Image (tube, rainbow, N blue to C red; front, top):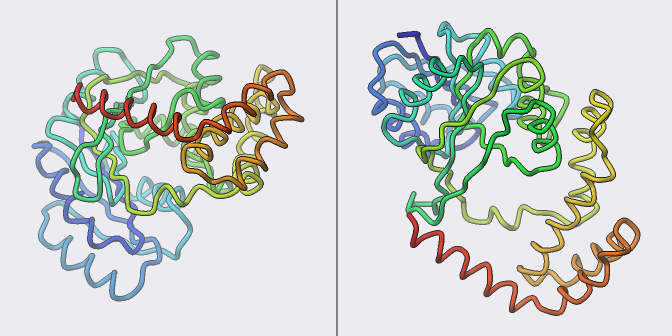
Length: 306
């Protein structure tokens, strides 16, 4: 059994840390360590981290200036002594056997990295619905799926060999958004990614998370460094296509949430970027109530299948 280092970035999230650590302990690993990285939290939060971490064996708390999740994960990985690395966000949790299942699959398929599926929950970890992904065996297809957003990234599902992690030099700290997708693209290009289809990661949907989706100009700007970096690396990736797909997804989100000003702003972009489809989007903009009902029905179906 290889030693697993579990890395948990923490930024002013002490009210969630106990849940995260408890979910690591129930993995019943024989060889493991937990590295909690205080990413520049307040002094009060840090004192809470110390108290919580002291209750759990094999747990070390390290402190660094605030630099974001990518920086915190890289610092934790540099400190790790395990041959395998797993990442867990402070406000998310794992179900039993998450890691043992992934370790088995990693060995059986000779993989460098194993992803998993997630269960989306509310603040109290009550499951709302499943979120599934599919991983192509073809390298170029997988890179395209990651770039264009077809495969949604959930960092707390990752199990990776330390060798593979440092071969791609970890997470790109120059990217403030989608650095996790860029990391997976690097791994897919240089190694092998496989999927554990089980749902053993709980992704907490925190109150107000939907309001964190900004206006169309801000959202496009957030994605731009990621698009530019990877389009320059791979000739088969097209930023224009990625932009059009993002516009479509954001348009549906704005319509569903009745953000009328952003619907109009996005329509203006779509008219320029996707003139053929523009008429369809224009009609869709008038059907916000119908679209909201369809998504509500979809979530009810998802819940029924849990």
